[in-house]
Image (cartoon, rainbow, N blue to C red; front, side, top):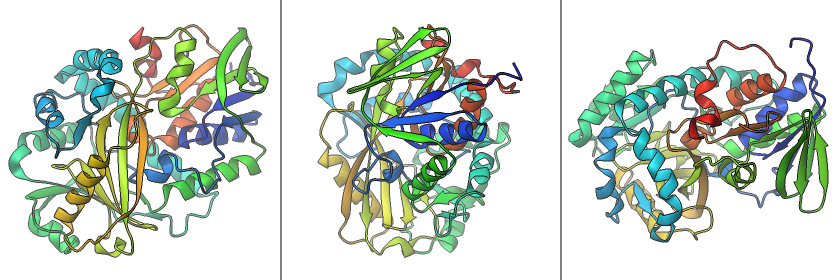
Length: 419
């Protein structure tokens, strides 16, 4: 296995997962072509890396499959002013996801997700630091930490999060209201306490970083084809076919890293993977980024405030509604109203944006070969940690492609868990 050399790889998806996988494979001397219907360098293209919160969050290992959250879901869904929303015209399509979610919403599954999310997330920053040695990140990355704030009304949930993270060895510093206001004096004191993740990295422009990694990939010999991929097939043991709308391309191996858009390809391969979409929104407040020194995650409202190069970004919430529904103005209104609760100094906003998080009902990504097609490899379903896990996913999946040994237990990320 050590002498094995993959002859060629085609990657579907030029988001942070696909680009980081491509970069790692090129470093290993494997010829790589990335496919996407959008050019990552286009100024008109606004993918997930354009709109996310910019957090590198290796500590965010607790997910939505928690018994303490489940009891509040109905109340949140029927509230017009809450962090969770549902497009009712999408309910029937969401049923497979909901069934798996309910099956995975218990203490045992919650701790399983946290354990195996931590297994890969704990190396996330280190993997990015390797890439950052090769690109200029001036004015793009800060290391001032990230603060979570909360009120005492959901204190049991906060205590659960703190305990699980402590048990996993994640460093966290509990702060009082007074200590938070000393760090961030412009915040309205509508919270009771919080936690600081000291020295956590934060991207002031994630899309600019993605573009730099993509350029690095191309500079090292990687290829990019701007075409819409319609199908991926395994023809022979060592031959896969990527079919676009206009051409066919042969590779030894193919990687599906198309985020929330991956399901249409995996369905064609006969795998009933319950991948769905969590829709997230953002707005910017121009020239207001100076109001905070670091990202603030407001747990009671389910959104965050991030000091970006484009201005102060208010970003977040979860809307279950698929890929085709139009943007929901009520979600934008909710974010703007919430942002002004925490920072009353804010004025008018601009740049209303909707993005798609690829969500699996146990909240672990799928990393590994297709159940029926061993030369087609999956790398999607990173949920809220797509940005955080980009670089480490690149290392893990490139190692799978080239047959490298690993001390990671990769079984929990297999698609087999849904089949």
